[in-house]
Image 1: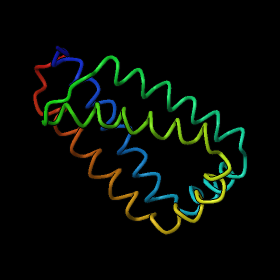
Image 2: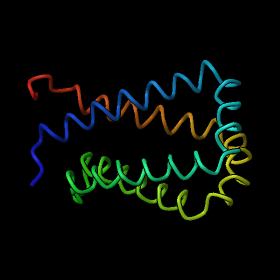
Image 3: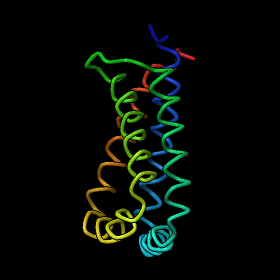
Length: 133
């Protein structure tokens, strides 16, 4: 059983991180698009970021294995997505080089919305009861 305090900590961490990323997307769109283009041009960076994503995703899933359908599962689910993203980037960097920039441009507002909504929700559940932690 994962202690509630740890789940709250991860909700706060993910919530704040996702809100910062959403703000970056909103206020610095052209710089973010250029950074994604530069990032996607390097297979080495894709593999390196994939291995980091895989590592962090494994840490999250191994330390927070919550599979009950409540807000705590969302944290585990984000860890599972990080594992998937990491494995895909490490195994198929050429594919990601070809698809990453066009996917990012087409889905820019969808990505922003997902980051913002998840960030708001996780921040809400993480900070709503200030007696925890």
